[in-house]
Each structure stands twice: as C-alpha cells, then as structure tokens.
Length: 463
Figure 1: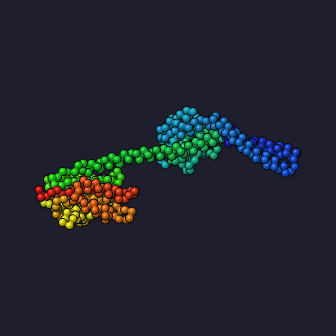
Figure 2: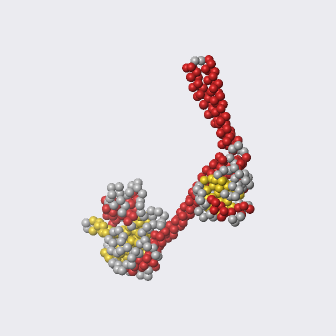
Figure 3: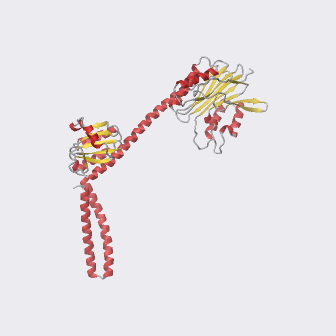
C-alpha cells in the first residue's frame, strides 16, 4: 500500500473511532441527564473528540509516512533526492545518477537538453546505447509540457505508475528519462518530492552557469580595461617650461574617454583629449585606434592632417554608430602660441592672468564629429600664451554634471571660482580640486559618465 492509500485508510478508521466515542458519550449523558445537560455534554464531547482525533491522526500519518517512505523503492528514490540537494553542477548530478539510480535502483538514465535534443548523459546500458532510443523519445514526448509522467513497456506515455517501465521529468530545459522496472513500487509522493527537487536543482544549475559566465565576462572586461589603460600615457612628459597633470576616472571598467600628451621637442607638446560614443569593447577599440593613429603620425604638428587621419581610421573599422569628439592642442612654448582644433568637444579652457584678474577663455568647437562622415576641411585656430596661463581640457563627464538644483557644473560658482585660481596654484592642485569637485557636485547621487581631465600650466617665458 502506498502512502496516500495508507493515509486514507487511517483517516477513515479515525473518523469511525471518533464517531463511536462521540455516540457513547452522548448515550451515557442522555441516560443520566435532561435535554439541556445532554446538549451541553454533546457539544463538549464533540470538541474533545475532534481535537483528540486531530492530534492522534497527525501522529499516525507521520508514522505511516515514515513507514512507507523509509522502506522499499521509495527510500531509494528519496536517497537520490538527498544527493540532488547537494549538487550544484552537472558533473555532480551525473555522479548522483550513477551512485543512487543506476546502482541502487538498477535504472538506466538519459538526460537531454529539450531545445536541441542533445544528449547530456546516457547510462552505459544496452537500452540507452540503442541509437534509435532518442529519436523514439523525441517522437513520443517532445510536445509535452513541464511535469513528471510515466512510460509504459513500449516507451509510450501512460498516466499511471502501475506497470510503468519508467518515468521522465521535463523541467527548466531538460528531459530526464529514468528506465526502471521498479517504478510501479515507488510511492507517488516520492515522485512528487523528486520532481520538486529537480526543479530546484535545474534552476540552481542555470544560476551557477550564469555566475560562471558573468565571472568569465568580468575577467575578460577586466583584461580589456587593463589593455585600455596601456593606451593612456604611463607618465606625462616633462617639459622645461610646461607642467602637466591628468585625471582619468572611468564610470565602468571600460571607458570611452581618452587623453594623451606627446612631447615633440623642448618647445612643443601635443595635448589630446577625446570621447568615443558609447561604452564597452567597441569604444575601447576606437579609442586605441585614435591614440595609435596620433602617436604613429610622422608630423604631429599638422593638426588638420591628424584629425583627417583619425577620421579615416575610425571609418575604416566599419562601425556604423561609432564616432569621436576630440581636441588637439599644440603648445609651442618657443613661439608662445597654442594652436588647436576642437572637433565637437564641449568648450575647453585657457585661464590667463590680466591686470583685472584671471580671465577664463573658452575654446569652442571649430570642427565636426570625427569618424561619422568624411571630413573635408579642418580649421586650426591659435591664441597667444603667457606666463602662468593654464590650459584645462576635459570631457563632458565633468563639465555637464548637474546639481540637485539643476545647475550645470561649468556654470556653477564653485567651478568659476576654482578656474579663476588656476593661475595661482600648481597644476597638480588644480586637477585634484577639479576632480574632487566633479565627484562631490552630485552629492549622494551616482555619476553618469566618465571624468577625464588633462591640464597644462605655462612656466616663466621671460627667462
């Protein structure tokens, strides 16, 4: 007798005994008392008998469950369930199949991916080694919904375990076929427990697989990020009358921002600042192409040629949605000049000292986006440089940060005051203060973009 039948029999017996006890109590009470007393006694008897029956039947059902489940074939299936509860990977699951089903239950097993019908595991038995088995299973069971059902001797679907040749489970993208002649002798509740545990297990396998995938991707992105950092200057060049400082903070591992400072000779230094559209691997590739194109150029003083070379390199990569905004500035200490091209970047800055105090000059865009459509003409502008002038280049990740009050950073009093002090403080101090302002301007909110700063300060030109 299986657990459900035993439970039903115990329940029937308990109700019969309860009814008998209730009848005896009422009979005795009616023989010795009046109608009112008998009614009260009947109500009390009903409550006592009902409560006593519930307590007794609970203990009986528990004993019946243990008796049924702890013995025979049901126990063997539940042993397999216990093994599955500790499995986190497919190899562990296969080991549980071999030890708890194939050996103990004399079963043969086939595990199949439901979307491709690829065999993940098959027991080393004559039945499962038959090349016609999987095609037959596919014909008979591929249209079924998730659940646990039984197979007859001809491997067709049957609704009852009586006379079943085995069972199979479809859940979470897997078919789990178990062929065993002892299937009819396993209690139905053991099958239900097995199905529930398999649902949990396959969910766990998918979760663990995703975690491993994320870990692998994380490692890959970390490697990409480390490679990207090699594109940036390891150290800024030293110049006799020009001091440099930089700050680079990617929002995520892989940034679209880039900068460079290239020493041409004792007087001339090329400053590069840029931002690739989007984020991720494609942005990192474009960034590397641009920096390498600039570094490989034979004449780094021809700014127009550099912009056109970068434009051609980006378009040659074949990305339809990738482009660059960039600033190229050639600082010539000997000529006391800054020549520059601003290709669709936000305004860049030069802070100069005047008799009326420091003045912040904005270097507006004078060229289109690089890498989207062919650039025909490039306008190069220039301005005079004097002692203590500070050149501040940054991406919009800094200047377009907005406060809770809706004030953009480069329009804020804090930014204007800090930029005004640029002629009186060191360039390292200026960059540190700008970076701190950018990271704290949004208070407790998350930043939404990379922050990159490259700054240069002119030394004493009259020496």
